Length: 273
Image (cartoon, rainbow, N blue to C red):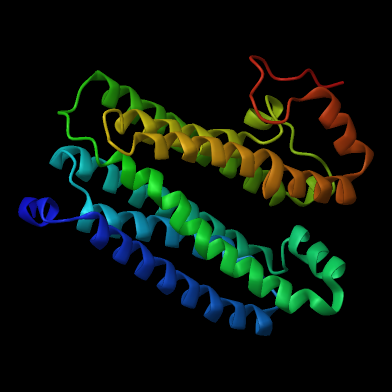
């Protein structure tokens, strides 16, 4: 395996990255056909999670030239990340029974252009899968032996993984309670910030960055952190989620917005009236 890594070159990396993107684009096109029948675009999120992890694993296994142990650790982290997030999103789709509110709203806004709009959206997600797999690969490229920075990176990643899992579980439990229908989840981690799942997702990418210290491609891990923050806070995450929450919960969510920070958790939970 080591000899295979040593024989890799930029050309082979570009070839494999291009093939991974083409495969992902074809998969997204097929899933777009599926959503034509089901009228549920939520499958795109599941495919993005699994696809990002799969591309990262392929890149690390075929062209990474970093320390062997580090490569193995990053591969395990990428696999766990993809399986946890992808499985959670898949179960949410199966349990929900109806398309997520933000996608239903997008269909209404696009009107007759909805299907071509969703096709382009699915293809953009294919590109994003490759883009967010690159920081994981870059983290595996560091050749130095494992040290305290790697231990810190793994610890931060674990905190992020556990925190996101707890956030998702708390919200799922809240939504499954019929007596909470139409109300705002403001307990547990959701009493400290309005989107703890997004915060802990972002935190995990800091773990990859610390593992990648010394990598010739370390700057890609920093771009990954920055892009994840921008996407969550300004593009696909919080803006869409909050607009949907305001449409469905109105003044109750406005009060929640006024009392609880959006992204970075408060040191103490808000006091309920």
